[in-house]
Length: 320
Picture 1 (cartoon, helix red, strand yellow):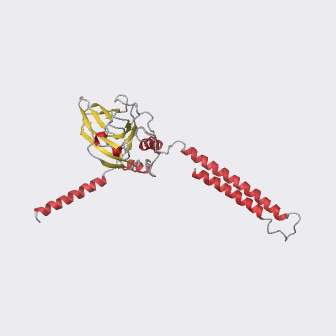
Picture 2 (cartoon, one colour):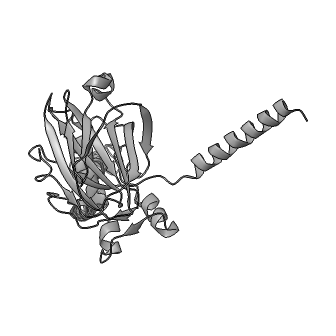
Picture 3 (cartoon, helix red, strand yellow):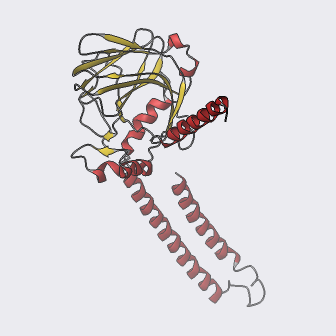
């Protein structure tokens, strides 16, 4: 076999191996933290005590020079991983590279590095059914101590900062505001961020199924060992459907359905009695044959109207 053929075979094998590794790589599920617009400096933004844990910061900058800050710690020997992303949505997709946010990381030794857009790789996050564009990543040996991060805007834009790679959910952090306490509670702030243009009002424009937390997929990740809960976290509590009002809404629907059913039954019973009375006592001025073909029309019409009203009310409640 010639050397050129061997090289081609080797290249093909390498390509297959890379492809298999890519398909086998687990999907990342970062622990989300949502930045407020007043967290403009590292010491006012979220503090994450362990940056080897997989975190995701969500925020927005409202214009040129607007900033958002955060802090995190690493130990000697840890690896630093940080990524800068934007949502795979308008208006961010229309921004030129020099209009996109810049992430500046300050190391414990006082040195800094700017992470700027150098690629645009689409990343579909399966655990929350959201889509992003990866702009840049930084990976290097970590230093023991406190790191500071600042995202600086060149134009109004939403952004996300990925930190760390160990999937450990609901680890304690500081200055995180009204942080979700269960997986299901992530949906509300995530949808607000995902559907609100920077500095604008929520559009509510979502493809069905987008920005929904997949509890089954998260459960599978934890069962396989790809993810875990922080020590002391109640699995039943964080895996439950804790969407505000969901249980009350279901109870209200059940009560309403029961009430409508009872009303319909009562109307049916009453109308049945009317039919029986009408059949037993024909109207005055008629005999058993003349006019008998019309005496049943009114009672039957009442039955139809009663049943129809009950069904319509039940249908409206179920569709509400």
